[in-house]
Image: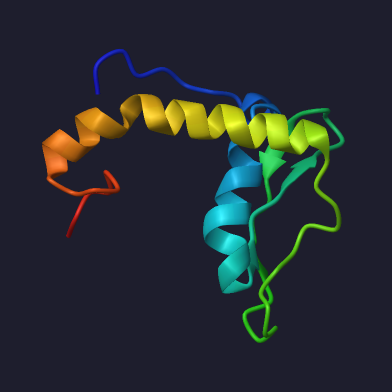
Length: 99
């Protein structure tokens, strides 16, 4: 991983990564990852995952806004920018690393 940096939890949330991990991966399974602000003002990932696996439709956002769509589009654009290299590397159409 050439040039790997660290991203703050706030930036992870602000840029839409938390939203998209939840929307595309966890929510359909009835799970949700969250972030909270502690009394010291810092953001932290919740130490637990919300578990609604027994719910038939999984976990849902109450409302998605235009701002949420803009963030989703930005995350998808980043994914698309890496897709071809990952397809070549892994030989998979979706660019997901196989087992």
